[in-house]
Image (cartoon, rainbow, N blue to C red; front, side):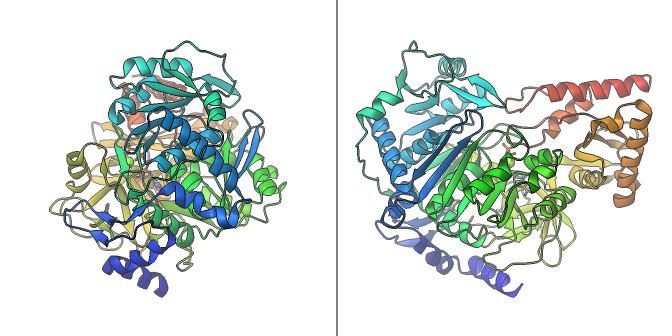
Length: 637
Ligand code: ATP
Ligand code: MG
């Protein structure tokens, strides 16, 4: 681990020298005066005085050498549309979009809210904002009107860019009612909505704020809009966190630091090379989409594949066929997608030629060992778990193959990435943990380039929320719980509010889930704590089986539940054994695939979970309710 250790140490002890070197990966129109301004902690300013532009670095800079290389390959299995854009094409489209936005009054520093499905125009719009120096805020296209309105009021945009409709699993979702409702609910509604007409929903011309994109695009077809040279610390975008644990926070990011951080990460963590093809199966509404569908692959001169559709339509082999057709080298998605694929026929995976694929990256939620083993065996390729947050913009923990390939440790996303002074701390004393001791994952000041600058419009909230929660220390809290071994590998044990207390023992629900996942019949599981008169709290498990028929009759279900509970006994001891195991066909998750444990816990205690604007499928809640009620009746409650 020598090379990795030296590299990491240099990044922490000599950040100026380290990041000055990395900054050479991007074009600076004006060189920076200083690498790091640490005069106002916990705020950090990277590359002060330097002027650059994200769009220039992602697009224009490649025109000299890769104008005819594909920059963006778009595939929609919802509409059957497939399009390819070379760097020259992308440059032209971004200029058109930028000209259209400018004609609608958008200028440097203005916010533009982008509420779009996975269509190429979303990429053009984001890059056009970057070009103009406007601040984009992408709102996931699946959100309902109240979520959209709340983000409009927080960001106060000059323009909203939207489409007639989204499509998911073969169903068209008409955006018009959502946009209209959000526009009338919002106190700070923008004067215009720029409408991309996909011709999926009935045409409409009624709303006074509607402006159609297509005729304006024609009008500005040959437009060339110069890049605004922004000071490195001007904001590039606002992105709201997923809202798994509460009110979403508007994460604000800079320009220069983000460009440098992403360009370095593609090399050191993803081992991507110019000309490679990367397929990140996520959504532009999430941070993974911002960083690894759009900015990082384009900054690196790669081809990025943008996909609209689910992993199982028309069948569970679609992603693997994309790998074959587009000679994809790097793939990145979330464990939840792999768990979906695990329930499909494995023959679909072997039907495609996967020889171009080098590595599969997974992030966003815990990667349980059985899923990791299943997918890496099935693919015969390395699987790299990486841990980060909307706030950080790029991985905090990973096996960084481009620095030094370290042995993989199943169940751990690896070791701290360069730039992050990552320390596990005791939640009561704030002191660093010994290896093997559970603690809160914290980051020392300064956060490396690419991380959030502040909460949009609310510096005090940034300081209070992130930097004042560990006793006696001004460190950044991730609000995640972990454990580090003597070699530096960190295991994520769940969120700090997902800890339950059973008869005086503090247990991470994630540890119990990990034990349950090792049972062969289990596809997915959520464990929550509920109040218990005797033990304080008791663990309840909600299990999705790989084969639902296995629990079809009550006797078989009881037997299986006991067998699953016993697995926990063996791995964690009887203390972790769930008081009950319930079978459901689906778990409540956010649209980004994260388990809504707090909602499950509320239902398990007979309370209502409250508003869940980011939930994927609300019928999953009903299943939890029914499972809990049925168990109550059986026990004669
Ligand atoms: P909110 O902060 O609004 O509640 P959120 O935390 O779900 O939403 P994100 O920033 O999308 O929003 O998610 C980051 C979180 O996802 C991390 O803090 C961690 O809990 C979890 N996570 C991400 N990657 C991994 C991983 N590889 N292993 C385990 N957990 C992960
Ligand atoms: Mg979070």
